[in-house]
Every structure is written in structure tokens, then in C-alpha cells.
Length: 107
Length: 123
Image (cartoon, rainbow over all chains, first blue to last red; front, side, top):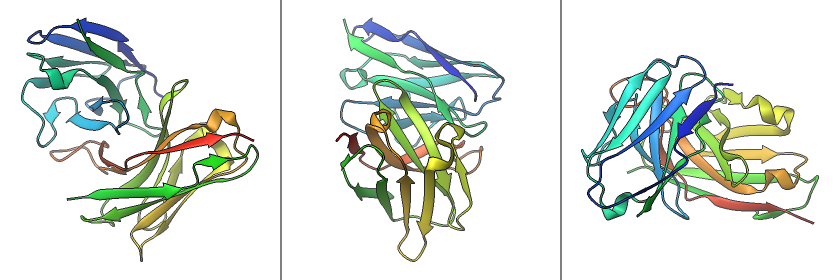
């Protein structure tokens, strides 16, 4: 299985801050990398697919980059609605696998 | 708008069988793969397996022969069967739609999810 390693596991930040979350795959996955946001008691919501393409309706303050094994999700100016847990997921090969998540909390 | 509605037993006894069904409203059923994913505090998000409308399936090797995913195209539904459950199978189970390509509209992502069904394995 392809292992996905996210860092940090948690992050404290303030409204207006710029934050970056990283995800590393255990082998090259080209750009087959997706990012999700999850709030308590809800299913994850797709933010970015194909490493850098914004899913419909997702604000432009979210950007994704990377290829191969190293990827990043950046939120340019944190809004109150952005405090949640973020997951990466590889779609390169089944079994599809997820990172363990980054919990973004209000400082 | 695509909606996934899921249902099934929320409490299952150890060694018995977990059964969940997901119904798809809106959008194309035949153009996608349909998947089950579970989430627990211990294992995080775990992909279980997927099916298409023809009944072609892929399963996670970690679940082995305990899992079966079936499809009913006449009702736009697909189902999860997990045999011989243990407490380690306690989780929130989600159904979701898989984008079956990597291109301008998606990349083997899960753009639509059911609301999630908590399943507890306990005697």
C-alpha cells in the first residue's frame, strides 16, 4: 500500500494567517493527490483534486501544489470556517489511502 | 445535484455480519465507481472497496475475503457486507462516489459522500 504522511498533525493559527500543510507519499504518485476538509460530525469535503485543481465552489484562498512524492496545501488567509481537520488522499493506485490528518485550531 | 443516502444496522454483535446500503440520487450512476470508506479514531480514514455499475469490484487487501460490495442498478444502490466483525470494525462508515479518471474534472477523488453511519460492534 502507498503510505501517506501528513505534517504537522495539529496546528494553531489565527484568522488572517497563512498556513501550509504537507503530505508525503511513500512512492511517486504523479499528481494523483487530493485534499479534503472535515468538520466534526460531517463527511469530508473535497477541496482540491489532481494536486492543484480547485473543486467547484471552493474558495480561491485554498491552493495545492506538488508532484511525485511531496505535496502542500496552503490557505492564504484563514477564515473562521477554515478551522477543521484536513486530509490528503492518493488516487494513484488502490487501495486508496489517506493521511492521518492535520487538525487546524484557533490560536 | 448528487445525493447519497445510506442506511443499515448501527449495532452488530462480534462474529456476525455488518450490512449497509447506499442509494444514489441525481447524476449518472453508470459513469462512476462507488465506494465504501470507514473512519475510526484508531485507524483514521480507511478505504474499504469499490464497485461500478457492472459489478466490477476492487477491495482493500487488509479486509481480505470478509468484504463484499454489490450493486443494484435497477435502484441505483450499492451495498457493503462485512463478515465476521470484531470490535476493530467499529467505525463511521461512509459511501462515496469515485471520479474514475484523472483529468480536468477529478482525479480518483471522492467528491460526493453519504452522511455517514456509525456502526458499533459489541455484544
